[in-house]
Length: 128
Image (cartoon, rainbow, N blue to C red; front, top):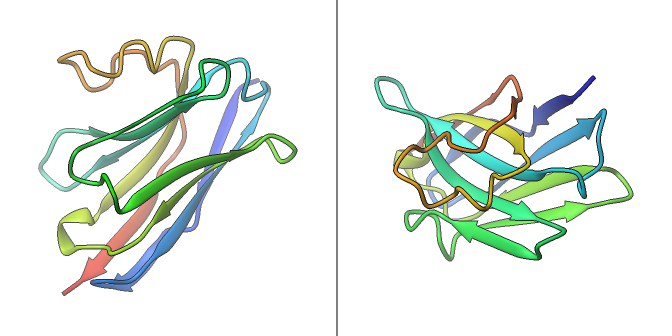
């Protein structure tokens, strides 16, 4: 059974940092690309970043480039999202997702294209 479990969310002041973790089970990171998405209240779910260990590619949304870094630990079967210089507009529920074609479809017009599995989400709140 494929499972994705996020952790690391919380409350932080603007300018601060958080590291989110996505622990995967039921598959290895070579089987699927992994992405981070977020959804703020009243807004659609949007892409944040994704990574494919087999294709050796990473993508970032323009809004987080230079501030967020996605990485993997194959030994732990875990994907991380290091978030620095956080802004109040980064406040959202952050979701981890896996998909065979996630990186291939990252730039389509539908933000959730390529997602096969979702985690349950973790709340990130950035205070001003």
